Image (cartoon, rainbow, N blue to C red; front, side):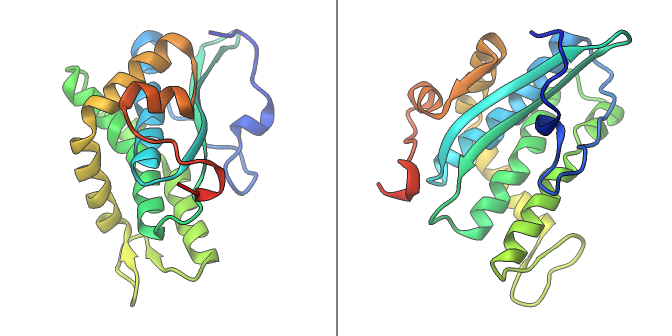
Length: 197
């Protein structure tokens, strides 16, 4: 774990604005593992849907006052259904909340602190740029609602929980995993760059 601040670009959302920092009422080890589950949810669903994962990592640092933990998963989503991309975006938060439940750490406050609005907003904006309508609190004509996408992701997270758990614990130990390392851990395929099989 590092004690220096990460590069500022690692703390920005897809629009270039700072990602919100939420206070997670856990100790650093529990919080770090929770973020590992979040990133593992993204990475495992990305592989399951045929995306190419470059890297998935934990980013942890301290300042004079406290520890901070975040993460990132870099992937290419060529030739993937827009709804699969959206479900992969929803999977991080769902995997992190499931971690809290499975490990006996769930409280309403901790679940609320898992909110990943930046993942949702990136999915909405990305799909819109390709002409697909993803509604936050409604089902747009010809599109889907975020609730529908979360349902898709919840089923997939449940189905792939063993793989997510394996990747989360490995990431917690190693801090950084390549897509090929995640594929080796899970038995899933890391589709080559460009989406070619």
